[in-house]
Structures are given as C-alpha cells and as structure tokens.
Length: 501
Image (tube, rainbow, N blue to C red):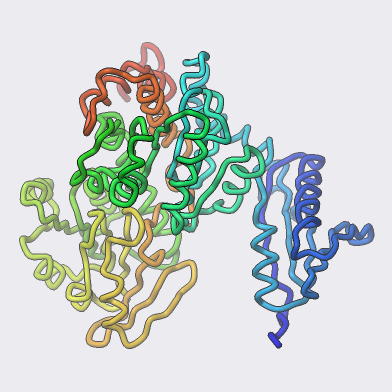
C-alpha cells in the first residue's frame, strides 16, 4: 500500500477579481470536480468557508478562497485561491492538483491584459468583415497571458472555436495551467501537448476539413510544417499558408520544399528592429532573478552567437558591467563582434580557456556548447539558453560526463563533471526568458502578435504577393501596409512636436 502524505500539500495562486467573481470561479471549479470520476463528493463547509473534496480513492482535499493579510503588498482586488491536499497518497495528490490547477482567468484579469495589448486587441476593428471566417487556425504559440488576447482577436476575426487548435509547447511558463484552462473552458478550443504533436495536427485537419475549410498555421519555432511534410505529406494541401515568428522556426523549414506561402514575421524588418532588445533584456533579467545572490559585475561572460538576439544580449551584459566575450562560427559575425569591442576568437575552446566565463549565454538555436568546452569553465559557472526547447547545450554529453547530476528545482540542473568543475544549467536548458516567467512585457510583444494576425489575414485572403516558399519582401510590405507599426509609433513614439531628448 502506498504511503500517505505526511504533511498537507498546498497549491496557492493569486487571482484578481471582485469578491463575487472570485467566489463564482471557486464554485465553478467545485462543480467541475463534482462530476470528475475520481471525486466521490464535494461538500461546502460553512464554518471554514471551504469546499471539502473527498476522492474516490479515499484521499481528501480542500478548496478555499482567502483575502491577503497585507492588501498593500498586492494588486487591488487580489484574492488567494488555496488548494490543500490533506490526506491520501502522493499519486492521489498529484491527480488532485492536476485538476485544481485548471483555473481560467477572470474577466478582470483579461480586461487588464487587453488594455496592455492595444494593437492586438483592436485588430477586429480593422477588419469588421471577419476575414478569417473561412479558415481554421492551428497555433503553436507561447502559453502566456498575451496569447489569450491574440486568440480572442482571431475568434472575433471569424475563426470558429471548433476550427482552432492550440499546441502547448510544454514550457514551464508562469501561467501554463491557467492559459490551458481558459482556452478549453472559456472557448472550447482543442489543446494538444507538444509530445502529441502529430496526433494534434491530424485531429485538427480532420475537424476543419469536415467543415469544408482549409487552415492557416501560426507557428513559433517551426513545429507544425516540418512534421506535416515529413510524416503527413499527403495532408500538406490542407494548409493555406504558414506564419512563422522565430528564426529557429525559419531554419527548420529552410531545407524543405514548402508547397505553400511562408509569411516570415521572424525575418521582417519590424521584428528585427524592435523586438530583439526586449528578448535579450528579458533573458538577462530572468537570469538575475534566479540568481539574486550572485555578483556578476566585473565577471567574465560568454555569448554564443552574434545574431539579432546574441548581439543584444552582449550589449545588455555589458551594461551590467560584465566583461563580455563573443563566439560565432560565422566569420562575418565574429568580425562584427570584434569591431564592436567584444573579446572574440576563432576557436571556442581557446576562448573559453582564456576568458573562463562565469556566465555562458547561448543564442545559436542549435548545439553550441558541450562537454569539451564545459570542462574548461571555472567552478560554479552557469549556462543559460535563450533559444527554443533544450537544443542549445549538449545536455546528454554533460550528463554522461558527470559523476553527479542534481535536479535543483526551479533553478535548473547541476552537473559535477568527472574531470572538470561543477556547473549549473539554468532552467534545465530551456529558454530562460520563458522559465516560470512571462518573458517580454505585454506592451512590448503586442506588435509582433498583431503582426502574426496580419499575416494570417493576408494568407486567408489569398494575397497574390504570397507565393510558395519564403516571402520576406512581401511580408515587409504587408506588415507596413497594415498600419500596425504606425500605430505602435503613435502609442510609444514622441508626442506631437516633441524633439529628441
């Protein structure tokens, strides 16, 4: 028989809502649990103002809505939702918390997020004729609050909820469970996990094709079309076109013969000139948040890759008073880094050996640093990735070359190398700007999200400039004509008549 938990296990989350809405949210959750096969009964206990959840396997949990003890330390109208598992096995506790974490956002929270995304939120006003009414949409976008505003706008632009599918990339975002719950419970949208990507694609095609429609793909990282073209080539004709927002996604489709148009927001002037600094700043800020007691000023850092993001990361680290070295296998970029004053070298091993960086930030998007280089690091060095999934570092090599590997929780994974130092890979090698965080501020990411929707509208409308394959020039034209960059400037540029400074 499995042992029972020794101490109550607690999951708590702050929600922002009036008391009535917060109580309804709690009641809705209790009602969903009441019909769960794993739940025997739900009882309201007036004395404790809480729901007692008796599980079919004998476990017991409790749901409570609490007010903050110090209202001045939180946002106005904040309530704390507390789920406690009081009795039962660890496996029963895991099932209980899996259910109670599915808490959608409140109307108050969505309204606040909408106010922070004026470009994306106002897209339906640009196209009141619902230009996406004749297509389905398959999305693989980061599960953050801003994504929900994009979804709302796509629905308002005509996409039927039944013809929308979302692939959860399974990153440890700050609000993963709440975003999924909102999509499913508020809109009835199908959500599939990344590990089930092919099944999710097939399900989406079947549903949308049954309605006599084709689909637009809105991707972040090149997940969908490579899978379709390699594993489901006979179904590629279902898709009208692809909108991609990352350079890593562009690299994944570069070697493929695309039979459909690609709207490359990733390579657009708009994204390259505006977003790169924000991503770099978010990556460095989240690194420092995870390491609040470290002192990096005056310490050596190494940036791998001097593309758009790497360039900005190097500059941000410089403003943090670190001594920054840069390596790029592309000689032109290496020369550019050198002429900007960064320490560089033709050999990565030699550069690591000479510079001995305490902080290594990977911005390449493919394997850029492995065991051979890690052995040359100083003790207690940190490896940080800014790119998709966990491809930046050779984690298998590090594991095989270690005498001890330690899961350090939210911080990441520690490796004690057999013939080298002890190092830590922050966030377990996943992109640091999304690691239990929201990455860019909503107002910053607003322009790119709006650009993705603009691309989808152009594809659905059959814009003649969009031909099978890459369409960088046409993408720039379409984004410029949409007016979203002008609106961005009006929102955040100088006031009328103002000069510089």
